[in-house]
Image 1 (cartoon, rainbow, N blue to C red):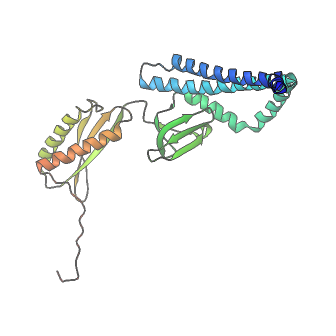
Image 2: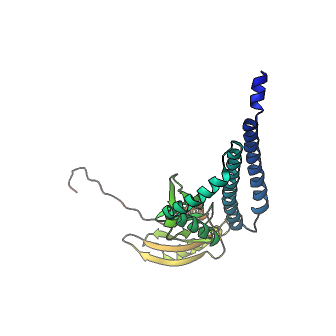
Image 3: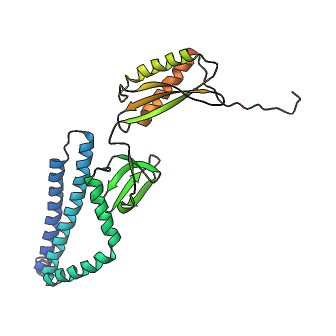
Length: 268
């Protein structure tokens, strides 16, 4: 039993355990303090931006602490860490030349954050893929679509991005209406719907009726433009379309749809 205690109390056993525990404790404490101090903001965008920066700082900080812990543990076991650092410096130069793409990713990641291209939580479109940014590191970005797919791309490959979350969203709704319906009546109904829509939480006052937008084979397409808070455009579109459908039904206004004639073989 004494031998077991003597073994456990050896410097080579207890010192690494203490270093690991202290490193984990420091990492979590510093992460908590940084998050509490720096994730406050005047608006939701500022909060998301600061949260993204805090997550990146936490990753860098954890890596730094773990490297120091490993060096201390190696020193306990008699490894010449000074020589190791010098060797790593030479190896770093070689790796730097070999990992130029990674360096480009890192520089692009810094540029994305500093220039406010997007932050975690933003809804963006990259290379015809739309979704919410769920992770942003200095090397890559993860975007999740509403259907669940996750698109991961290197930051250096981000040629252009459309960010739907940095300002209010605007979208046009075309409402197909039968040709025989009186224009004045349709316009009156749509303006009433728009007036009610502005009472919804999310629709902004500068939403407006545009007029006749186009003629199709079986319908006149009337158009309205809606402005809403960022990220609410799909929800607002569904609600307003429902309101239009209900108003058309109440006023007896027809929405044309394709019809198919089926004959059972008899002469017409």
